Amino acid sequence: MGSYLRPSSFHTFDPIRLPPDSLIGPINESMDGRHEDLLNLVGGFGVLPELIEGTSSPIDRATSLFISILDWQDDGGAPRALDKGHSRERLGRFPSNDGNAIEYLIQFTSEGDGDSALHSLLGKLGGGLSKSSIGHTGFNEGSGGIELLGWLDSSDVRDLRKEIERGGWSVRSDEPLDGGVQDAFRHLLVFLRSASKRKCGILMRRHS
Image 1 (spheres, rainbow, N blue to C red):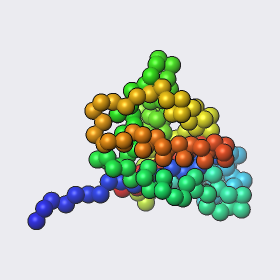
Image 2 (image 1 turned 120 degrees about the vertical axis):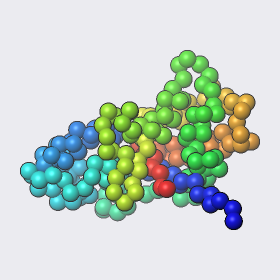
Image 3 (image 1 turned 30 degrees about the vertical axis):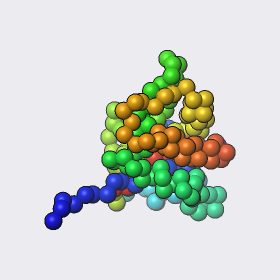
């Protein structure tokens, strides 16, 4: 019998209305039972569980961050997807070893000039919630298997879109997938254009 090949992870790109770094401090305070700052930021949206002053939040940091930053609809409904079609599937489970299109783009593209922010923006989207990026633990993995990778705010979305569209980058000669970089950028642009139109940011998650 052949060895079991675990399928690659699926990745999603969610619309967000608040930058995660604005919530790190308030969520840490909430874990210590001080909820005022967090409630001032997101309390009006009705997405948090009941928080009792002096009592630690009943949910972990990553879950609290996730539900606080999402671009919920005005009536409290689930956020409208940035894409519901082909790009969601193609970018979500990219045909690389780990299924991560953003890491693939970083690895197999070269930036065109010294002023390019392409890789730094891709790195923020693919890993901006790691401890090395935000200086805190507990914000990228939570209960129920939630795994938050990184994010872009609305200005980052605009800047990354411009970086891709101006074409100052090049494809490395050792790219393993013929046309893989072009395909990944094409589908990523679908999300970036949708987020630009809605003036929101993007959160990248992994589902193993």
